[in-house]
Image (cartoon, rainbow, N blue to C red; front, side):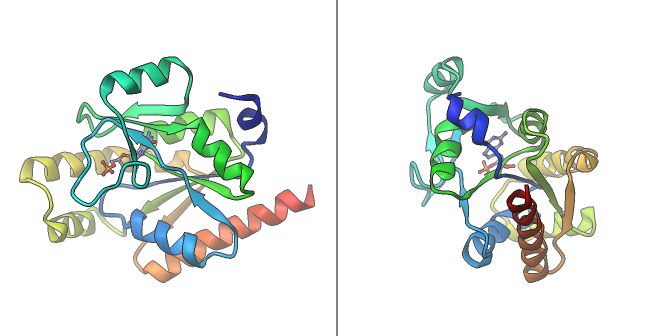
Length: 200
Ligand code: 5GP
């Protein structure tokens, strides 16, 4: 971690939510439509790229050895093995610094373990958990995506159940039963925080 990042990590938005909660769509619309400037920090991961994913754009794809070297160098704000898949994911300080040098909110779309670590370091970070009205709705959405095997789907559902237990750790919770409404709610939360920062 560099001193700059450690001292200026004020505009940090941590967003979590189970697979199928619609996080990715929310993120795209939020960045496009919210008047508060936001930049998504590109995480590093050891998982293989999916078709269409571009290195440096969707993720920084690293080998396990590269990831470990960078972890030991202190390049990560947080990192975690996600969904018990053996794949590691991490937020790079360089991404947070770059975002802040642009005067934007650093958006971290990360799992609950990573989120809790960031919240410990930065209690003033804005943390939002995106959820759906029910677990049945999660299952329906996961199945309609149909990109995963039954085994992976069941694992994701179990992860969703586990993640929902930690929902109270987040400062805000947004139910995504209406996409536009969810985006507006998150944008409003950020606008309120931005106003508070200016009032300081
Ligand atoms: P996927 O493999 O589907 O892109 O992502 C799987 C999970 O990894 C998502 O729940 C996402 O929130 C989480 N994730 C992505 N980047 C990071 C990161 O930098 N740190 C942590 N802790 N989790 C991440």
